[in-house]
Amino acid sequence: MRHWPGARRDCVQCAAVHLHWAAQRKDVTDVARNLEIYDAIPESAVIIVAHPDDAEFGVAGTVARWARGGARVVYLLATDGDKGSEDPSIRSEELAALRRAEQQAACAILGVETVEFLHYADGYLEPSLALRRDMARMIRKHKPKVAICQDPTRFFHGRGYINHPDHRAAGEAALGAIFPAARDRLTFPELFAEGFEPHKVDEVFVGMAENDDVIIDISATFEAKIQALRAHKSQMGDWDPTEMVDKWARENAEGFDFSHGESFRYFKLGGD
Ligand SMILES: [Zn+2]
Figure (spheres, rainbow, N blue to C red):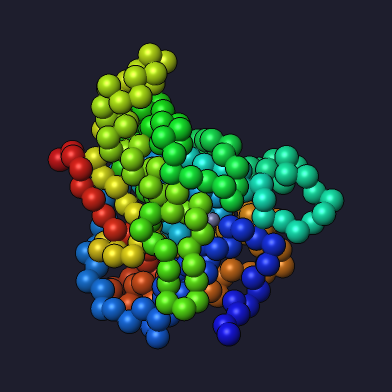
C-alpha cells in the first residue's frame, strides 16, 4: 500500500496532489508523450477549478508566467474548500473564510488580478446546469481569451488514486460554460437579461489531463508556484511541497531544453 508522505489526511483538496503524483509515476502511467511547446502569452485568462489550492498544484507556474507576461488573469473557484478539516472546533463558515483568504494570498503572489468564488458546497459539486450557468456568467463578465480547467474525464490513475468528484464536476461544468453557454445569446437568456453579453473563449487548456499534448515552460516561475502553494497554510501544515512539485515539473520537462514544465490538453476554438 502506498502512502503519500506528508499528506494531511484532513485535506479534501490534497486529492489534486494524489492525482498528479500517481500520473507521474512511470510504473503506473508508462505512456510515451508527444508534447508540443506552447510559449505564447495570452491577453487574458480565466482559471476554473473546484477548490482552493487545485490551481496552485496543477497550473500555477503557467499562471505566473502569463501574469508576468502581461496577461490579465482571473481565478474562478466553484467552492470555498469548506469541508477539508478534521478539527472539531472549526465551523464550515470559518474554514471557508480562511481558505478564501489563503487563495487570495496565493493569487497575489502569482499576479492574479481577480478571484471569484461561486460558493458551492465543497464535496458535493455536481456538473449541474446551475453551475454551468454561474460559470458562464463569470466568463461573460471577465471575457477571457483563454481558459484553464480540470479534466472531467479523469476518473482513475493506476491503482493509487480515484479522482475527486468535485474536480470532474468542475471540469465538466467549465467546458459546458465555455462552449456553448458563454458564447450563445439564447443559452441561459437570463444572463443576457442581466447585462452579460455573449463571449467566445479562443483557447482551452485542460490541466492534469488524461491526454496532454502541450507543455509550458515554468522554469522561471517555479519558485512563485511554490510560494503560492505555501500560502495555503491551513492545507499544507508543516509539509513543504517543494520536493514533490519539483519532481513533477522536472519529469514533465524531460527531453526539453528547460528544467520545469506544466502540461495540458489543448483546444483551439477560435482567434488568430
Ligand atoms: Zn481539489
